[in-house]
Length: 78
Image (cartoon, rainbow, N blue to C red; front, side):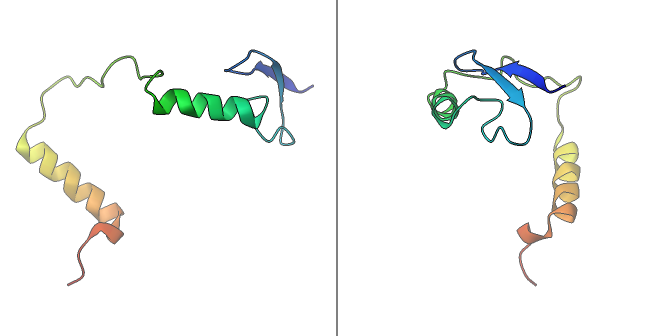
């Protein structure tokens, strides 16, 4: 039995399966309406990410180093 969800834009039922090419939306139109809402900042993440402790320069440097180790394409050629 296939799962059915509501289209986030118009609330029409959408069958959640591979043949539903616009899922979770019912159509390309609803998908583009939602994208436009994000672009116009009508949708927002409700709260900023909160950390238990403030970030020090050392913590930022360590995170940057870790990121660069996993994403070599950002490193300048030697």
